[in-house]
Image (cartoon, helix red, strand yellow):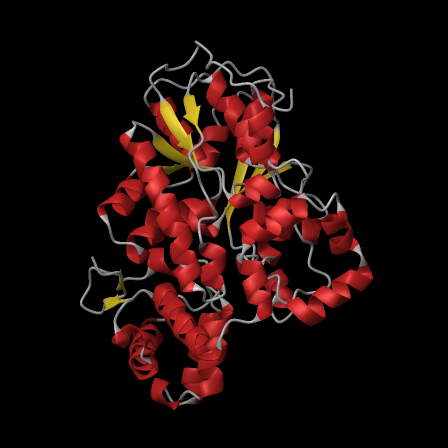
Amino acid sequence: MATTFMNFDLNSTEFWDPQATRKELMRVFDVCHGCRICQTICPSFVDLFQFTDDAFGNVDGLTENQIEQVINECYQCKLCYPICPYVPPHEWDIDFPRMIMRANLVRKKQSGTSFGDKILGDVDLVGTLASYSMGMANWANRNPAMRGLLEKYLGIHKDRLLPEFHSETFAKWLKRRPRRAPSSSGGKSEKVAFFYTCTVNYNEPQIGKAALAVFEKNGIDCTIPRQQCCGLPFLDGGQVDQALGKIKANVASLSQAVRDGNKIVVPSASCSYMLKREYPHFLPTDDSRLVAENTLDVSEYLVQLNNEGKLNKDFIANPGKLRYHQPCHLKAQDIGFQAQELLKLIPGAEVKRMQACSGHDGSWSVKKEYFETSMKIGKPLFRFMQADDSCGCTDCPLSAIQIQQATGKKPVHPIVVMAKAYGLDPEK
């Protein structure tokens, strides 16, 4: 079956034809210019509309540099998609993020992928090497001289706070951890396949440990299927072949897990979005659709469990005041505020919520060209998160780093709050 993407075939010459891509790009720009509901969503729209106004409302008057700037400023937050009145199925068939992604893929095929994008895209390779560096990777990320070299040769802004790497990854921890029988207090029939994500594996293993502890507390039988990075970092750098390799490998493993009776549960908003929304576009097969239809965000899954009367509510610790940030890629999934609903189940929890873009968005804010802009984008969220002495929460580990960069305080994942409310210590 051919791979379709915005009414095109990835294997066709038309999809990769620069003139056809530009024609479709101008069509989308023209519709967006006439609508403007996304006026303040992101810098991409702000500049698109300003450039179009300067051209007297004619998108064909945009210069190549202006078009390039609009493409570069779209960091794939997806916030425009849920509010767009012309998304498929519609005769205008507007999907701004995917159109920009296509334009970027075509551009990268012509110009080639930079060395920096190749490094930032291969998260599994970088994470594996860093985990074996005996702390040298973390030292380099904090050393001013090394950061200057990273900026010069990889384009990583010298002031960008980078994730910490762990010598014991989540996958390594799993291998030495004795298999525990699920608690008898929950639903014994529940089965999940945990897609723990590369960020949890290399940078935030405590999130994975907390998730397993919560599953066991609720009597959930959790399996760990073979998995790789979801492929999103490769797409950010225009490396579609490498991304497809990751997607095909994950679909093969995860689809089998579903056929074995498991729901796929994911603790990171961007990765669950990839499995749910992007996999069927890049790999339109029955298996990829099976994966998409059976993938749930971890909070979404636990709320579903609660609605079925199966969630263990034997909480023993009060988390107090919480300020919750809903990531863009959860809002784009259109599933409501699942983490907030979950946290409110804990007695004594006082949850305040804000849905706003942190500005991190994968590798985009890491780059020296966009770091300062990313911090401006996140200012409303930063003010919200430091308004009082509440504990900050977010489902996105990268947003947590962005918030830490601005406020000095790193939010925790909602699943970590849940584990602590149960009185669990996943490390033990």
